[in-house]
Every structure is written in structure tokens, then in C-alpha cells.
Amino acid sequence: ARLEGSVTATIGGTPVEVLYAGPQGEFAGMDQVNLRVPRSLAGRGQLDVIVTVDGRRANTLRIAVQ
Image 1 (cartoon, rainbow, N blue to C red):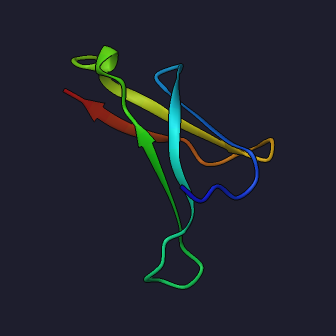
Image 2 (cartoon, rainbow, N blue to C red):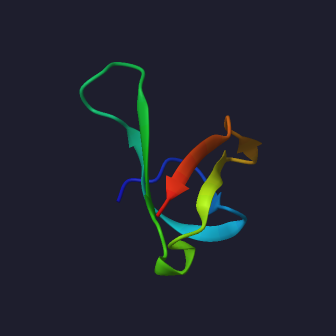
């Protein structure tokens, strides 16, 4: 996993493992973040994904966890 800087993430307030954070590879200027979603979040519905890179919070993303 290529991590650029300090990258942390939470889903629904739960800290999650960052598997990869870096260039997307196909589209210039696009970055990608891969997160491990824990089973404990199953069935929780709409949850906010918050990613922080080097102390700066990215835009919040909302996902549905079934």
C-alpha cells in the first residue's frame, strides 16, 4: 500500500484501516483511497466517510452500508 503523508479515515465515526492512498493511476490528477470496512458497520445504513490527509480533512462522502 502506498501511503502519501499521514492518512486516516472514519466511517460513521468508527476509525477504519486505510489500505491505499495515492494516485489513481488512469486519470491524471485523480487520487484514490481504499478503506477496509469493518463488519461491525453492517446494516447501519447511511454513514459519513471522513478522510484526513496530513491534518487536512477532505470533503465528506456519504455511503450506504447494508
